Amino acid sequence: MEAEKECFPRLRQVLLLFVMLSQTCAERKDYTIAEETESGSFVTNLGRDLGLGVREMSWRRARVIFNNNKNYLQLNLQTGDLQINEKLDREELCGPTEPCVLQFQVLLEDPLEVYRFKLLVSDMNDNSPEFPEAEMILKIMENTPPGTVFPLKNAQDLDVGINNIQKNYTIYPNSHFHVLTKSGSEGREYPELVLDKALDREEQPELRLIFMAVDGGSPPKSGTALVLVDILDVNDNAPEFAQPLYRVQISEDSPLESLVVTVSAQDLDTGINGEIVYSFLYGDEETSKTFALNELTGEIKIIRKLDFEKIVSYEVDIKASDGIGLSGKCTVIIQVVDVNDNAPELTVASIISPIPENSPEITVALFSIQDRDSGENGKMVCSIQDDVPFMLKPSVENFYRLVTEGALDRESRAEYNVTITVTDLGTPALKTQHHVTVRVSDVNDNAPAFTRAVYTLLVRENNRPALHIGSVSATDADAGANAQATYSLLPPPDPRLAPAALVSVNADRGQLFALRSLDYEALRAFELRVGAADRGSPALSSQAPVRVQVLDANDRAPVALYPPRDGWAPCPELVAGRLAAVGGAGTLSRSCGYELCLTGGSGSNEFKFLKPIFPNILSQDSGGKSEFPE
Image 1 (spheres, rainbow, N blue to C red):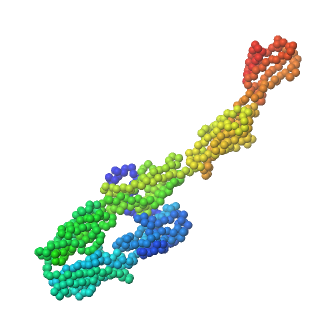
Image 2 (image 1 turned 60 degrees about the horizontal axis):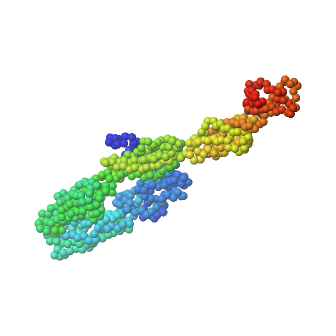
Image 3 (image 1 turned 120 degrees about the vertical axis):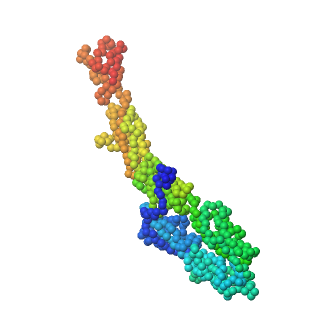
């Protein structure tokens, strides 16, 4: 464990020590069906068993998950019925294991709940006993005493329990033997032929017997083989093994042709009576496909790869026969040693993406892990990288949930790539990685923001109506409709002001237009407020002030204020008149030129310009012209 910590100092590790974790798990309930049941057959009403309505099961996306990802059952969401999805063959699913149990879970989402169940597949008597060979030959010395036992090859019946062979072996026609059944260390039944009456080769050199095996089913099924008894002349020593029981261990990753063990037997006889031949005694197909026995040396070698996860041990019975037919027996127990040859497996049951950015702790993915190795090789550590705002939480049994640590901010990061690493504790350690992409969906949590605090626009008077006088712009950090701004004029603080009669705004682009021609002499500046609202729900908005300044144009002629139009003056030394350009507001609007025009018969020396009495009026020039500055 210290080495594991050094390898992963920054990883948050969750150690799965085959602990039954129960977070959202309801009480387990077992169901039983018979093998070969037709597809579509009713098992139970799951809605009733769980106390859920059909509509609730549907919107919570109820589904059935088996540990090996097979779909043995199907859930009808319209009725809540759990039905057989395909015919089940108990022998194919479980072999000799009894009871035959299939683990499955019912997964409900929103909120997450997992219910664990067992499906027991009961056996039917659909297989007959079958001998590995249609004919068995026994060579028996004629002086063999009554009570001598001769091992026979047993019949194989794929059924289990009462449907298997229940010590029901018989042999006929028969006046010399009876069948005795013994149980092996693994519970298997081995038939033996017991001599009841001495044989006489001269009277009958050969016996042909029918050997029958009957199972315990109802109705029972049977299988037969021919037993040929060859009666021999005297050979008084049978082979004897050096030890009756051999126990060996061999690693599951041993290469083919590896030597497992060498058995050895001796025969005190000489010549042909002392020549020993080794053979497998019983017709175990799995043994004969996995191991090879040298009939002369007694060496047992591997001819097929071993797999601890499938078979952990073998019991092999070896027969040593001499040249005349006497035999001895020994048993070899081969224990397969597990090695870390299976990497952890990760299966994703559910994943949610995208997820809303402002949600608190939320389940993103539900997944299960398993390792088919045993011991330390099957223990696992599940972790994710440190630089993501997620964490792993153990759920039911070998299930984990990938959840957020808190609310996410899409504007900071819109997508996360989470790597789930499952590492076993074997040596060397094996690991599996699964990558989950989590996208964050937008929530309207940002109001539009104007690019300026205050906008100032300039427009010259006498403009044409609908003139584009400027634009405002606002940005929104959200996405989609939440980021689409709509512009509008806001009511003024003073209801007597009506900027909406002077200016309009384009709702989509923020362009401002003058609705009518402006007059500097009537209105030199005005202020309005523009609002920007996004299209989220609820919508968020902001506003900015806009000041519009009207620029003056030379659109007015000077006006003579005095003297009157008849030009009469009471005194020649009095001021004859003043010229001034007066704006609409009563002030001098700009510089203007003036000159004196005389009528016929008058002379220029009869008039003179006085020094301006206003400091902003320029002095006269030699040509009789002067200017009034603004």
